[in-house]
Length: 342
Image 1: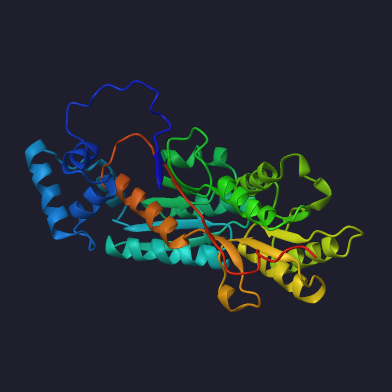
Image 2 (image 1 turned 120 degrees about the vertical axis):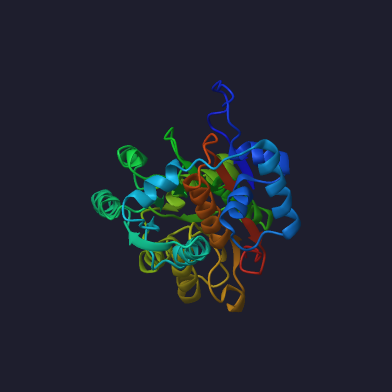
């Protein structure tokens, strides 16, 4: 995990009172651990919790109650909201479960919404959540600029999208490097014609994964092998069939998310025998397919937990510079990406 401070180059004067970051540094832990100790959340080792409490006493740290006061001022909602692309997507469902578990430890409940990459729908959901006076929002934004007004009334953490200059924390996965690694894996097994199946070209994560694909191929990149705008398994299956039925079909497919991978696997089973497949995101029963599926696995539970802890740290008064947490994706080799072209 990599943590960036996008505003680190801006000079800041040292605040007169100790901050949560000062306590974290003194105790040798992260800010989220300090927040968990302050809130009495489970999962912190007793020795670590004691070290944090000692640092709080030694520094004379006092919790900034501004955020807590703000959230209780409106009837004490103790509610946060999670806004994702599609809660029915297995990746986002797992992420939502992790957010809900972390919220429960803090005594909060969670409202859920799916924007489906529809800006108007996203705007309506944000307005509905803020009208309910939620204390915080974790969001996969369609358009970060739209959130500028929302930030005046609610604390926000972005997931899967960078902050783009907005004063919010964000949790990302290094999809570009991961995609490059997956495509290089196919190249190392002799494939030179590798089809790409991706989501909407407007989505930041889709852009990153396509760029990783291009990075790996270099001058061998062929735009004729790229299919984008695939929003579900059915459209991905149709696109994969089109590639596999072309005059010069690819010998391998790179599928850029879980639903697209499902479509690719179906197409290969029907009309692409021997075609290698590497997918982005793990899917249920991937290890039970024939051959078992090689994937780039990102951890939605870790992503959701990290985002929720960042949010609750802010609600508990953490006023340190905004953070961009970048998590890795892991190449899981199982068999489908290791066949060689005939």
